[in-house]
Image (cartoon, rainbow over all chains, first blue to last red; front, side, top):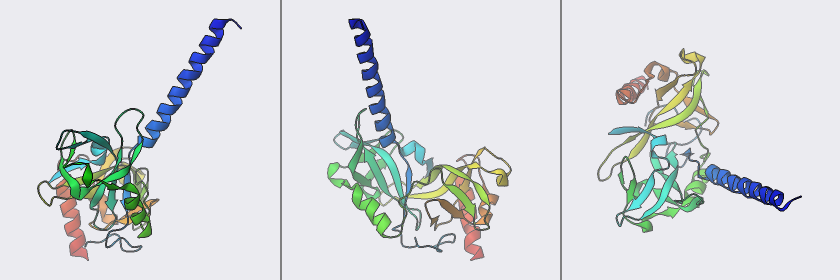
Length: 51
Length: 195
């Protein structure tokens, strides 16, 4: 293979690696809403009615 | 009292009084008992920064504005691990509610949670409470596929996979945040009267 063929392969590999790293980082940084069950009434069967 | 979706808070920068941009909000952590927001987990700023090992407790939040969350300084941050582990140890699932199914206590599927609505009370001693879910409605609500808001009781049922609400919640469904506060109050008043 010509030298420029190897260059193209190397560039493609670099782009794929950077893309993979960014995708993993985006997944790790993605937010959510987490239920913390440490509240005073957070016990099975307790939900559904007022304080 | 101000109503907002948690998706508006996520990714908001956390800034100190000194003007230092120390982190951004990742997860919103709330208590199943009372729905009070306990704090936020954090991610670093910058393209390659991941989640941080420190979390921001709600009591340390000085201001929750449209563009940033303001804190005094970085000493107010607490270990994230402690927040999550205390949740699990005390029976909480520590699970993300986004994507969870909402069921009534009559066993009817109302839809899937797409966002969470919180009520923020400003000023000293202010608090932030979960008051509703934005759900992608099921056929049971007659508006299948549409996003609607359902109010929550003061005390939430939390299993991690299914979120339970009283059957009467579907009578107080709203379409936008304007007027949803009144729907929450009416729903809770009705529950209080029924118990």
